[in-house]
Length: 540
Image (cartoon, rainbow, N blue to C red; front, side):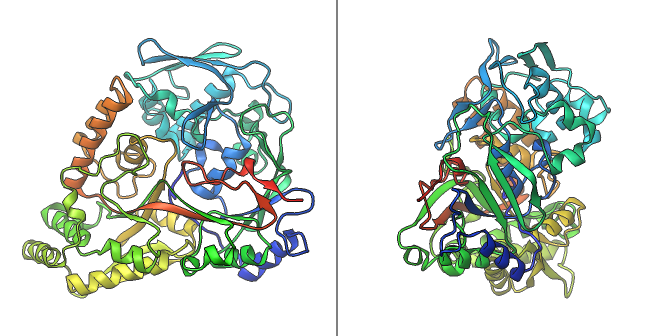
């Protein structure tokens, strides 16, 4: 799902946001309304609430709450059944999916095998330009659907009302592990009549549904419990109202003053004080997420051998630990590879990872070596593009550009973009003039999920347009392995190729610092850093 997957934000005036959150509070200094509704911080979704069109955090957390798929993920990342009665295979190629009977969408229409097959076909079809289409690329027929305009995946077959089969391109031992991700959610028939309109007011089947006219863009999103939901995420509150902020500082002010109930990320200027400010109503938890820096392959200065030397130089010119200590108050961990330590198969001993070590002398030598082959354009400023509505983005990127200026003796500066939405448009149009901020929050707990969507040829979140046949082949070997453990070996070998090519530079692993008001309890973060909203209870 989720490009914190890349952290995003929205354009709304601070005054407006503050006024609205005050209206959403209890009026007695508490954030939770007397009717048991929880207020929570969020950012404006990039697109309509279509599972295969949502690839960022603000929309992703809502999609996960209003849709139910075959599985969801428990707090530890393990699979828990939603609509799946069974997902079985004898050869890891053809999988038979059986659904629980009697499941319905919020308009009363049944959830059937066709609800999944039609939704997946729609998501894979290149004509529909869905951001999550890449997640269907291992299903037979994806190439025809993606490149030749076929409307359906030949690997999907409806057997009966509650059974369908999935034929993959090759063996994939951890295929069921994917199926908790939002791209694999079902859609009702009504969705295909007008998908854009449906995304504004979707008919869904999750633990919550979007209230009628519940999405006020750039203001709030109101979710109410779905009385027909029978899965493992039954709401313990009377609803979630996501208030949309333009920055984390405003949200934090509301949290401390009791006009907001839940935030899952603290602004940098509160990291020293948030535990005292909130009087113990706070937690810090490492999750499956990272931060990195993308260096687009389409920039002339980063092509060929000089480009490779410059990427190495930039990496070794950055003192990651110093930035973590000064900007993030020690709340993150320096990255040692491209995934995250909380995942099975993680290794901090990937050959080539020494390029992540801070060595300013070596960095300058590498930069000069590149210049000797192809000089950096005189007077050219190395831009570092980033939206500045995310927590700490401005602060840490200004710190990095300062280090690059000092250690490489070049001009470097933050190219500040107001909102995440604007930044994504620049990235999607290959409009970056220099390096860019990026990060990833896992869709499902797998090493592959940090590698395929970000670095696979043509992948949806491959911002740098990296392409390597050798890397792609290694990913396929990992997918086709007989076990998750064997697959991890291939994925880590794929990382060796990334360290050689450096299409992106890992910076640090993420941890979320969450806080909550005195009006709620039982606030816990999941394996992906997102609060388990359905578990939050209000205090009477």
